[in-house]
Image 1: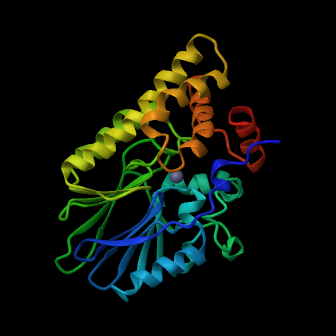
Image 2: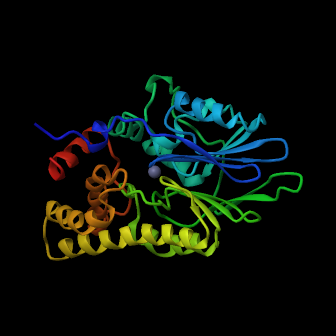
Image 3: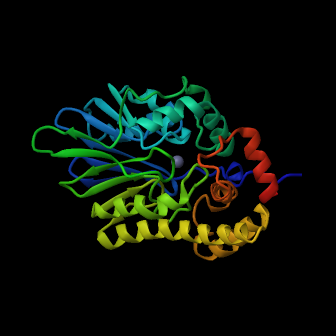
Length: 319
Ligand SMILES: [Zn+2]
């Protein structure tokens, strides 16, 4: 009998906490479940990430509406993963923004990713049949897009830093308040999902660029808000450290002609003391190691995950 996905056995609801990071800047954290945010413009809202379903997003919007009733002009999606984007219809946003590669990825693999992620993480797929279809960005960019927040609120700068957690991640940066919404490029005390990642780019130039912004507060993809430069840098270096351990361990086994299973076991052993207690560690690691193995084998772009392939890899490595 195969062991179920770690997260499919994880059914306890997480507590959501709305934090006001500066005037008109909000983060909702959820004990390791996906984080989301919102930024007030003078007469509109920018929302960051959409959660997995419209029903899940409605609950967040109800909390946000205790603070502001401005309409959502922009919904910004950090990347294409289903648990971040499929709640989009609840926002009734005028404009849905992503990196241009994210739009291509939705077209190429959005359907398969939806099926894969909802089977992997059923707790997040609350009222799964409320999702009306794939979420399509209506405004995309390649390097940078600046949103003038109006009044004296300054700018919100959306930027691409290179390949990382996916091929098309963006961050949202408030230069005046020095607050960064990093999406899944940075995790604070949560394990990394790297099943669609470019490990070496991410651990190198991409995180260097994120770090060079000099954020004073950082909202990662999961985990607590990092406050102060020391905590921000620690979250970035923790993310990089996880990637480096993976690259070293999987690289060593791959280099000596070992097996994927051996690479998984070596990586698990190397990470479990420092990272094993953090959310989604056991769940992600088989998919993470599998992708890195492919990357080291010269498979440039991540192989599309399907519900069937998930089961095969899980059974091979965690079964
Ligand atoms: Zn993701």
